[in-house]
Amino acid sequence: MSPLPTNNFTHRRFHPAPFLISHSVQPPSSHQHCCPMDKLVVRGESSLQGPLTVSGSKNTALPLMAATLLAKGPSTITNVPDLRDVRTFSKVIRHGGPAVAFDADAHTLSVDATTIETPVAPYELVKKMRASFYMLGALLGRCGTAKVSLPGGCAWGPRPVDLHIEGMKQFGADIELDEGYVHASTPNGGLAGGTFRLEPVSVGATINLLLAAVTAQGGSKIENAAKEPDVVAFGRALQEMGAQIDGLGTRTIEVQGVDALNAGTFRNTPDRIELGTFILMAATAAEPGRPVDIHEGTHEHLGPVFKEKLAETGVDVSYGTEAVTVTRPETLRPVSVETSPFPGFATDLQAQWTVLLSRTDGTATVTDTIYDDRFKHVPELQRLGMEIEVDGNTATIHGGAPLKGAKVMSTDLRAGVSLVMAGMLAEGRTDVLRVYHLDRGYEDLEDKLRGAGVSIHREAYDEFAEPDQAPAQDG
Ligand SMILES: CC(=O)N[C@H]1[C@@H](OP(=O)(O)OP(=O)(O)OC[C@H]2O[C@@H](n3ccc(=O)[nH]c3=O)[C@H](O)[C@@H]2O)O[C@H](CO)[C@@H](O)[C@@H]1O
Ligand SMILES: C=C(OP(=O)(O)O)C(=O)O
Image (cartoon, rainbow, N blue to C red; front, side):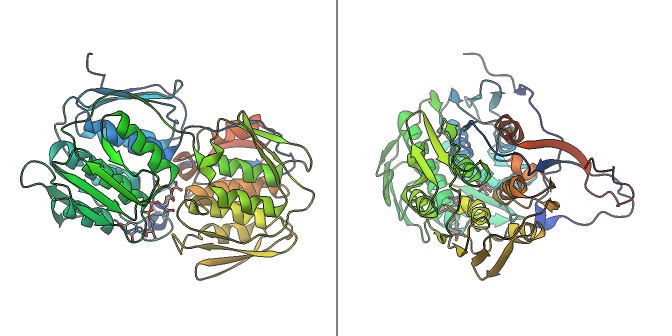
């Protein structure tokens, strides 16, 4: 097969955005006058009618893209969502030499990793998305050497990668940190393999260590491994490529290294967090008693805790083979949740659950045990009128406060979608600023919601416009 062109992307949409990491955004200096970004304008008067369709999973697509580097040939991944993260990670891969082609309309991404010339993932790309750090395992596994930028902080607080690095060392890598980069090498041109225990359970480290272990010279064991559906789907694709892996979906994963993986075609799994988000939107923004259908999701990937908690609120959900059908009750009951690794309640759904709790007739809490500072959405939700207090890693939400539209700032992916969800429930107009966070992980969100009856559209705006420079609001 001939090599793929090096820059082959079908065009969809995205306003150019600066990929700012929100906590590092500095006020503009006086000579800066324009910072064009996109915002979503949501009006709360219309109800969500559906149907909605779930896209491919971000958190499986990105590891699958990294896995293509382990095969010396052209691989294809289907059901890949058109997300900013997919485009950024394509650039990361292309930087090393492989050709990447993405047909966004067909949701098909091809990588030809016949040769890798530069086993490097540069800061300028890695800083835009944490999953770029998967290049460490993929490049070590393929080339026996890697230079990968440390990903740095993120929008809600520290997200360390010490377990990734310690695990690679246990598998036989020599690692040095220099000028913000991880320099990894292997004494005999490849990893030996080894045993490493993750404490705490880490999705990212499990994936990175799997990438490193599947072509190691010996066997490896990952103890206290993550068993999120994204990890299992990714591991199954590795098996399809010829990897010898036992224990996927359990806390102990064992790998016997093989010489190389085979290129092929792999189907990405549906996005379970998008499915959960749509369910919670329907549970709050649909007309009571009127069912909303959500298609293409895999409801088993939500885990039992989410389903049990949702049932306790009084939402009626039917998990069918063709669709998940959600019927909003007249009154939602307050139900507290605590995030934990799968099969527990996902940290990526706690901001959306916070919005649901604001529509109940009582008080309940959201506790995040995965990221105890993941509450940047709370001050913005308070701007819309929600009554929420945060103490440590717990938010207490008093339901029933009236919500009124306002300008609110998206600070990270799930915080951003919780603001859109709240805007659907607030009286009047809500402007959700910095939509580039949402574009990282929700494909065509405004088109999907508009098609389901929500009043929502995208507008460009100048982030740093003074009030008298700002264009007049249309309502
Ligand atoms: C277990 C879990 O729910 N993981 C979530 C986490 O994955 P992500 O892969 O980003 O994070 P991890 O699963 O690695 O982190 C889980 C916990 O381990 C800690 N940790 C992680 C790596 C490391 O090297 N050292 C370390 O101490 C983290 O600080 C965190 O407290 O965020 C993603 C994006 O929101 C979610 O999709 C994942 O579901
Ligand atoms: C924060 C998320 O992604 P990432 O780990 O890629 O930053 C997320 O999926 O909610």
